Length: 147
Length: 133
Image (cartoon, chains in turn green, purple):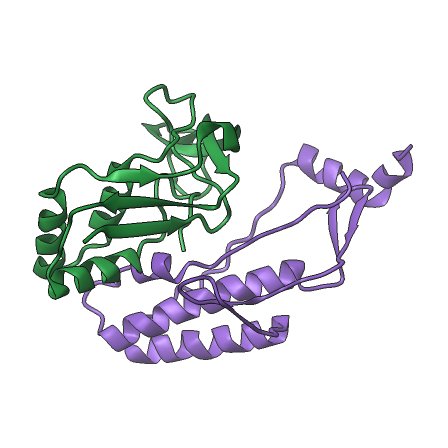
């Protein structure tokens, strides 16, 4: 029985860098989805469900082909980790600002799916995974909102 | 540019991740709801009117708007929310959250532009639009 996690990009945009950070990642890496689920985990049952998921064979990614994906870049000032007596950031006293330019992808289809063709989770595990998926605020960078 | 479309969301999933120390579950829910109402109030105060002044010489007229609660799967329950509605909800939820143990800081932060920025703002709102064309 296949297990599918469908990700609908709330604003139609997938925001994640590829191996070269200046390039947009496409198709989305399954690890992005797994990490998003892990970030929502809050108890032993959640972690058990994720341990089950990571023990499955490699999943498939169903997504638009690259020819149907527009890549773009967005630049913005963000708070940096370095500190300075002169500060600079309005929300983090003593921290500096720095310009960051990040790549993103806009597929024609505003969704993609991660599919485990032969997974057969127990009902309790499936319920946990569904619950985790429902509480994921973003996949990739915080600008890429799923629904 | 023939059209500008703005899409904004308040993520309940994002609010769900906020933690409030040893507060009760009820207090945490109220605090999250207060923040959602505050965000909605900010959106409605900024964009709830019939037009938006984007910058000097660039006034945007609204041609349509949809506001709603999006359910899992994408279905939208349309809502009508005035800025007054959102502010009233925020004030009530902030007070209920405080009564339950989570008090929102009420400090007033006054932002004052540096002189050159103040001059630029004054110029933009008084005479900048006359340069159009």
